Length: 450
Image (tube, rainbow, N blue to C red; front, side):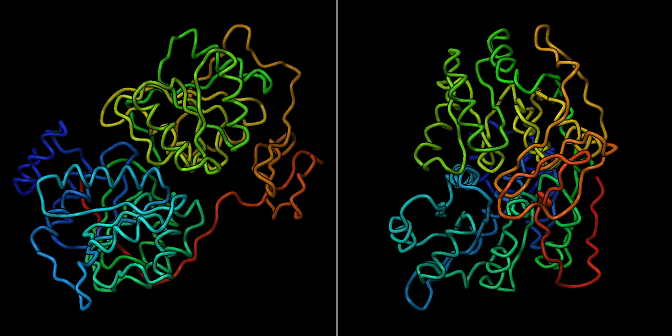
């Protein structure tokens, strides 16, 4: 199959060829004709399989076929809205939109927080066909009356699962109340859960359901490995692996912002150039770190889960989980930064005894036992026992001595005080928010066969 066979217009095909793409990925081959048909779509595919082009290319064709009309105030209206969970992802998506719209008379802009609003206001005044935005800044503009979404024809919710993980369900509901009810809606997600179906029930009308791989699985092109190690030797093992293997471009995931900063300080003392990217960094610092990493000037980028969305690098060879995520689906997102678009990649996890329960949850989700390895000189101490892991100021989790391998349950320990182990583990608050269910009952999307 070729992009030509999908019915895309010549200007779009020309831009796609210039980006070096000749054959559509499975998600693109299935999604593009459905979006061109004008219906709602619920699409699930692994990270790195080309979801962005799957909705961007047909969107551009639909918009270019219908010239815009000025509103009552003489402004060119926003006709397509793409909502993303993070700034980096918003910037990446809007860059893709510009690349694919190179030979079309369509305009786009990106809108997110952390930067001044006035330049965004001025850009909106000039007219924008396609707006890519994060929820918070979009609602800020709406509240101040600086943008009008009343003529949105196509609405895209990208990385919907991450939206829910980050607690954006209420902001999404607010956005849905602003945009027209009569529109084409597209929901794209790397993982596909019951919560996503509940959101789709609220957003979509008789959607086509596309799944190009088994739910919550990593690409087969990614080699996954676990290195067991004592908790106090992780930093040294990480530096050893990078230096002994002469890796030049490594994306490392840490669980917390302060932990990412400490890890960067340590790596730099070992002669490994590293920078951190997370929510406490200024937007300029985040942009510079990501740019230096993409161009190879920076050897290691240490990221938290929230900031990592939008890191889209061709041929990124190595992803390392310095700390395992407490939400198993985040593991799939993390390692999906490598092995993209059919390329091979390595995903390594440094696991201490404290994280055994996280590892078991991940393996249960992906239905795969990840091979275990040790490195001489970094073996875990035989007498090491699990200790609670603090997740932020209000959440802790006991790593499981005496809990039979089950994740402790409970509502946390108020007042921000970390719990201490008692009888085999502390009780955490649930690490994932529960989005509200609602909307139409009996949601039953039509499944497209492969």
